[in-house]
Image (cartoon, rainbow, N blue to C red; front, top):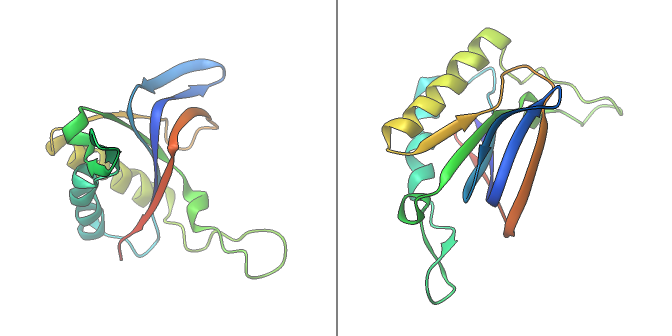
Length: 146
């Protein structure tokens, strides 16, 4: 599993021009599921996210978690995080999980985050989405499990 976390002041997802989800301060998380991932990897990474200390404290030091600041999460499934660009100019996606596996594990990831007490909003799996954000910092973290 591979996720890209962007610390944001706000983020939103639109499909066909219609607002689907939006958040204020928090994380926009792009979620990639590989064909080798299981619920174990999903749960492990979901346990780390709530305690990742990348928000600034009163001294300007990244010392606070999303839980500490009352932030929200916007979770967007993104199979292209498993693009293989080693051969030619067209990326291959053989390492990405099949649709049915990916949607199940993405939903579990979101549920595990909710079980940690976080507010989680979502894009729409498999849709062509327009994602807008105001990156705060910018701060972007890549996490992998498995």
